[in-house]
Amino acid sequence: MSKQVEVTMEVSERVPGLTAGVIRGADLFGYVGIEAVLDQMRRKTMKAGFEFNIMVVGQSGLGKSTLVNTLFKSKVSRKSCTPNYEEKISKTVKLQSVSHVIEEKGVKMKLTVIDTPGFGDQINNENCWEPIVKYVNEQYEKYLKEELHVNRKRRIPDTRVHCCIYFLPATGHWLRPIDIEFMKRLGKIVSIVPVIAKADTLTIEERLEFKQRIRQDLAANGIRVYPQKEYDEDAEDRIVNDRIRESIPFAVVGTDKEHQVNGNKVLGRKTKWGIIEVENAAHCEFANLRDLLIRSHLQDLKDVTHNIHYETYRVRRLNEMESRRSLERAKKPVPPPHPPSKHSGEMIFFFPFWDQLVDCF
Ligand SMILES: Nc1nc2c(ncn2[C@@H]2O[C@H](COP(=O)(O)OP(=O)(O)OP(=O)(O)O)[C@@H](O)[C@H]2O)c(=O)[nH]1
Ligand SMILES: [Mg+2]
Image (tube, rainbow, N blue to C red):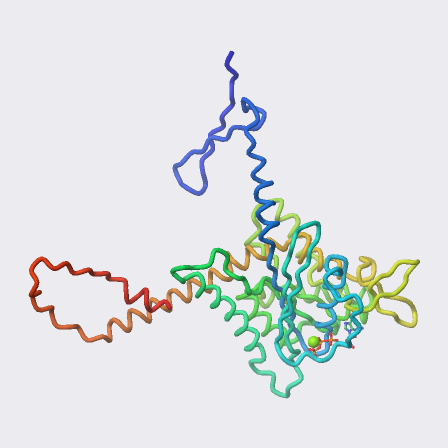
């Protein structure tokens, strides 16, 4: 006896005019095993591991290096740190990237943190964003070059900056012109997550008001911060991301010290009136930042970097290459016509794109 199967015909959004039949699970004749594809993907990803690159940017002394250590030492990454790390953090004087391989439940992640020297100490801070913008673009260029190789690697090493944490001083006022200028430029090329640094210096009310003012300032200046509304994939995404957008910038506190609280070791800052627990949601929003970066949006940050920021760079560079080639071609003198070949029947191979291919490398 044959079983009736319900086939819903849907119009494919990708290919206009093409219809796709959707056979729902309950209507299948038996187990096909499609869901096993998830296991296959999981196994492959576990073998290959992830690469994730975070950059920290902001004025000098705002606690960028400390927060990086906090991220590494917090529960997600504590295992990968040297257990008796007691070095004092010194002023960052050059752009440096540090990689750690974090392994949790068999999943490996190569986390690279790009620490940048603080800016704002100079009398003239004009163009102080240039080395950072240059670094971000250099990583795109590296990736593009690898992609254009004829024999390209199966897995191109990814050094592109997937996320830039931008540190705002806890002034309690408005955004400063330098932060506006910096974020305007960076927001066009990389996903920025702004944070209020040293949030322990603000009261709860000051923090809330400051956050609101910053959000107004960001909107008024057309600064793009992550997660951007335009890239929400569906309604579910929008609900989650709206909640993040409403609480951005996260007010964070960093530390590289552990203290005993009720018999437990916690990351915190000891003050005369108590311990500010970094991972306690009632004390600051460090946990929200870590969750966003690692637990909930890591893959999305990578996707946005590849599909939006890198793609914009790639299109621009390929267009530049093409117009340079056209210019060079226009400049070249036209060669005289070939004399007739002495060898009758000789085959002349002609590959019109050869010079373009050579130009790419
Ligand atoms: N109150 C408070 N102090 C902090 C916090 N995070 C870091 N600090 C302190 O601020 C000082 C500067 O911290 P760093 O992490 O070196 O700051 P940085 O932004 O890396 O500085 P540069 O490398 O000069 O750009 C140190 O004394 C830290 O202990 C925080 O969340 N709250
Ligand atoms: Mg530093």
